[in-house]
Length: 372
Image (cartoon, rainbow, N blue to C red; front, side, top):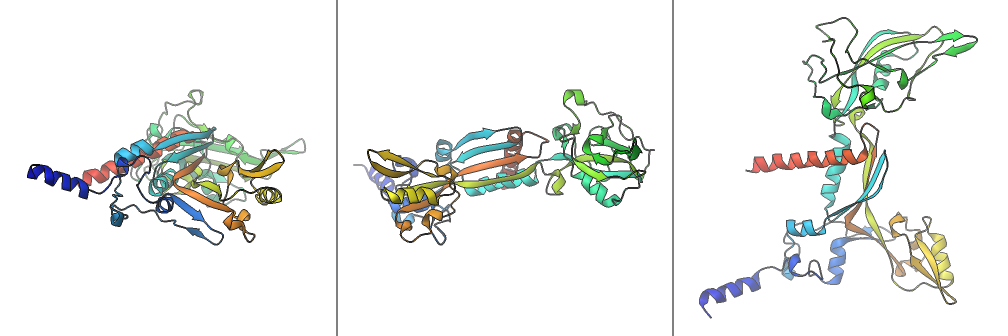
């Protein structure tokens, strides 16, 4: 054999084993180490093996390369929609690290833009509510409009059709036929002004008239909910104001956050370490508040089985009593996330998630550009 061929063979032997070289065992690790790498063990007292080993030399003593591998990521990654409504998206993200899932969660809460009332110009307010509190409440009313149709407005910019939406509120409470009319001021009373501000032009406040091209008939500018209570009035009290909505993100103020919440949890995994039959099976089913376990009858024998592991909240009720920790094991899968997005209503939750991915992609491109 030629010297170069011998050297090549020697290099191949010394080369660390890659996960792709061992399809049956993902990392080629012993079973107990593979479980520690991919699972969180939820004991009766505390969780164990919570930290993920993400550096290349984690298993160097076993001659195994733990480097991040893009080909393996493409092979393992999955995104499955579990349920989808107009307000809530629940999906499974499989094969990603907690850092990526958490980055998407934080972007959804803080960096996906929306439109919200920022400036309130009050012409008259004789209600019991102070002007500052009234302006704060108006800012929290969600507006159903696509923020992609608008630009960010800087402090020195003049309001125009590309950066501002104007709403007018003019209401007075009166007593009519012994009953109070307009005693509850709600979001349905906010009137969109397509032609912009109706207040006199002012160089200091930068008020000006303009024309928004969107219309409610096109599914354009309107409030998400018509029954949001803004204020209560008594007979003779009134308010007249304009609210100017601009584009912003939740990092600046929570009123621009497009989600009520965005959260994730690791997929639970419930293991019966031994066969549980008879009265013990019935006891196990009764201990679980989420009906994770069921009883199956084989002949005259009642045996416990895990029917709904996804519903497990790791409450550990099945481990409380002495001896049960040797029979039942609770785990969580480290790279399997149940991700939930609850939209406030400005945009559908699936679109919010797509926007979060686009923002994360843009951030990655900026980092790569700086690195190069």
